[in-house]
Image (cartoon, rainbow, N blue to C red):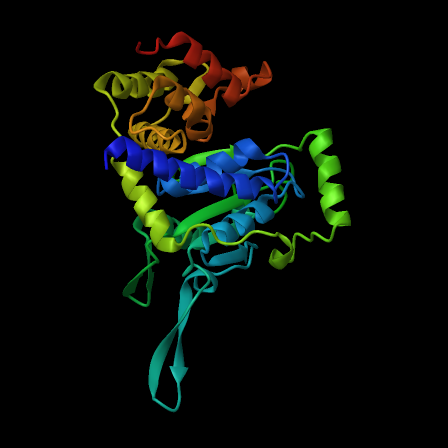
Length: 322
């Protein structure tokens, strides 16, 4: 069987997951696709949206469609690192300490309102995201192979929050902005609730697992085999470097952004059933890869510019390979 056929099959199975998810999370098709790309690329994603826009529902549904373990942690100002990673507890009968794993030992972790936790807890999450391991009392323990963090934050309410430092933001492969659904989709949501759907009851979603945990690892292997032409690699580098040269940004994207865009474009190619990346794959994910890795100047903010608008303008100015 050729690589192209293998990638077409991988794309078909991944798109079947998307089709099922779209029956549960209505009107958020682009966000769902970006979430699946993050999972296939082996990265983490930051979801930003006002409360009630189905962030938790989307992650629950994704875990159900792929038969992955789901964990949720509500981040609060008093959340301690051990509340996330786990703790050693003295077993009086055995006269020894026994490790009780925390909620981070899962496949899909929802870090809800991640910017409400203090720096120590953020550091523990950062180790888990970057090293895919946690260290408790000097002992390092690996996390599950499919471990992926989907962190959420509210773009409106900042009281009592700890803004994520640039170093931590840079660890998220994508920043996914979830907006309100269209009016027609919102009406469909009401119809679903009238039929018995409940967001807090996974059994009402009406989806059965399509993939298993091992399938995700196989899909990631397929993503890693996707070919990226040297001209497309140059295109990625030119886009990222353009953010450093643009006077509207005080901080441009780092080389890690180039790697992230490279990985996301390969995962997008798999969803399209291809074994090679096109410039359109790169364009499709330039904004979600870069928007949280750049900082606008105060003057640009006063003028009402957004990072998304400026990145879109940069894309128009960087010639794509033919």
